[in-house]
Amino acid sequence: MTPLLEARSVGLSVSGSVILEDVSLSVGRGEFVAVIGPNGAGKSSLLKCLGGLVRPTSGEVLLEGRPLGRLSGRDIARKIAWIPQTGTDMLPFAVRDFVALSRYAWRQPFGGESRSDREIVDEALHLTEMSGLAERRMFSLSGGERQRALLAAALAQTSEMLFLDEPATSLDYRSQAEAAALVDRVNRERGISVVMVTHDVNPALRSADRVFALKGGILAHSGEARLFADTSLLRELFGTEFLALDGEGARAPYIAPRSMVG
Amino acid sequence: MPSIIVLSLVCLATAPFIGMQSLSLADIADEGSGGRILRELRIPRALLGWTTGATLSLCGMVFQALFRNSLASPDMLGVSTGAAFGAVVSIRYGLSFTLFGLLSSLSACSFLGAMAAVATICAAWRLRGGGISEGTLLLSGVAVSFLFSSLNMILQYGGGYVDTFRMMRWSMGGIQTVGFSSLGAAVPAMLLILFMAAAFSRELDLMVCGEEIAMSRGVQVERVRWLLFLAVSLSVGMNVAVCGPIGFVGLVAPHICRSLVGADHARLCVASLFFGGGFLVLCDTAARTLWAPAEIPVGVLTSCIGSAFFLWLLIARGRRNDRWR
Image (cartoon, rainbow over all chains, first blue to last red; front, side, top):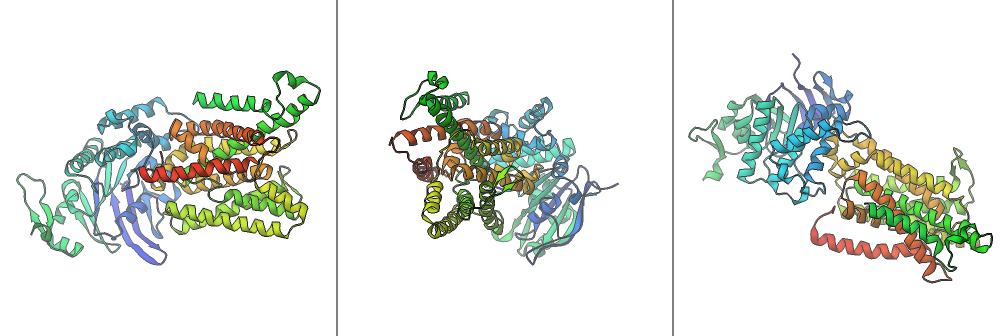
C-alpha cells in the first residue's frame, strides 16, 4: 500500500549551502511522526519540502503516490493542514473569520461560505474550546488561545494530515499540555496523521509512533519513538549530556539535559 | 458601511453645484453658461475625481495586503512617481501611438513607468527573501520615488518652456477635464482594479496572514502576487496618465476603511471604492473653492492632508505596536 506521504532522497540547497541531503521517510495513514534535531538541522526546511511550500532541489515528495510538484496548491491544502511556528500574532481577523479562511481550498471561486463550511468551522471551534472566543480578534488572544485558534483553523481545513512546527514554543506548561492533548486526540479519534517538528524530544516520546532525527541536514536516526529515550543516542544527536527521569506511571521517561538538572 | 456609500454618493451628487458660480439642479437643462459649466465642466470633473479616488484607494488596499503593511501604497512606494516619469517621457518626446486600440501612448508609458517602479521594489523585497522590514520597504519606496522624480526633473530641465510648464503642472496631480472624454481611460482603470480586488479578495485575506499560511491554505502566492502587481501598475498607470500623480489617497482611504469595516477584503473592497471616491471629490471641491478664483491642484492638497495623516499614523502605531488595526 502506498504511504500517505513519502519523501524520496530529498535534498535542498539554498544559494550554495546544503540544507538537506538525501532524506527519505514516509508517513502512513493515522500515523504520528516526529522530526527531532538540534537548531539548524533542517527540520523546518524538511517540513516545508514535505508540505510543498518549498520545492526540493533534488529528490521528490509523493502525496498518495503523486509528486507534489504536479499538484496544485489547493490539492495539497485539501490533504495537508499546517500550523506555522510564528507570525500570526498581529492578525486583524476575528477568530471565526480566521478559521473560516481555512476553507479556501474547498470553496468555489466567487462562492460564499456554504452551510457545510459553516458547520465545519463551528465544529472546529467547539472541539478546540474556542467557541466562546470566536468573535475576538486574533491579536488580542493569549499565546495558548492563539495556538488553539491555529489548531481550529487546521482542523477546519478537513485534511488528512496535520503539520506542526515547534508547537510548544513560547507556551506555558498548561497551554502546552492542552495543545498536545488536543493534537493527540485528533490523531487518535479522527485518524489524522501528524508530522511534528520539535527540538524537544519529550513530546516526541510521549505522542509519536515513529521519530526521525535530523542532524546537519542528514537523517541521523529513525525508528520507533521508544528508541529515542536512549541518552547516548541523544548525546550524539544534540551534543550534550542527558538524564532519563522515570516518573511514576509515566508513558515514557522524561528527558532532561544533565546541565539543567544539576 | 451603508453610511460610507451614502456619504460618498452625496459628495458626488452635490460637488458639481458647489463652486465659484453657485448652480442649482434647475441649471442642468439650462441652455446658457450655467448649464454648460455644469454639463461640460463640473459633472465630468466630479465623476473623474470619484473614479480616480476609487482607483487609488483600491490600489492602496491591494498593496497594503500584498506587502502586509498598512503604510504601503502605490504612491508611498514610488509607483505613482514611476508612472509620472513614464508620462513625462511621453510628453517630453511627444510620443504618440495607441496600444491595442485601448491604451494611449501616455497611458502605456505611465504603465511602463509604474511597472519599472514595482519591479524595483519587488527586486529589493525578494532579495531579502520576502522578509523585508517595514523600514526597509518604505525606504526603498523613498529611494524609488527620488530616483524617478530626479529623472523627471532632468527631463523637465532639458525641456522647452511650454513643455516644461506642462510637465510640471501635470506632475502636481490635478483633475482638470472638459467633457467626458478623460473618463474613457479612468473608468476602465477603476473597473480593472475593482474586478481584480474583488476576485482575489479571499486570497488577499490569506496573504495578510503571511506567505506561509496563504500557501498552506492552497493559495498560489507567486501567481496571485504577480497578477495583482500587474493590475495595480496598469490601473495606476492609466489613471496617472489622466490626472497626474495624486498622493496619499491610496494610503489614507483604505486605512480608514479598515478601521471602519474590518480587515475582510470583500467588504473592504466596497468600502475603499466608495470612501476613496467620495474623499477625492471632497478634496477636489475644496481645492477649487478654497482659494477661488485660483485653483490649487488637488494632488497638492491631498499630499498636505496625507502627510499629516502619515506622521500621525507613524506615531500612533509606534505606541500600539500593531501594524494592522
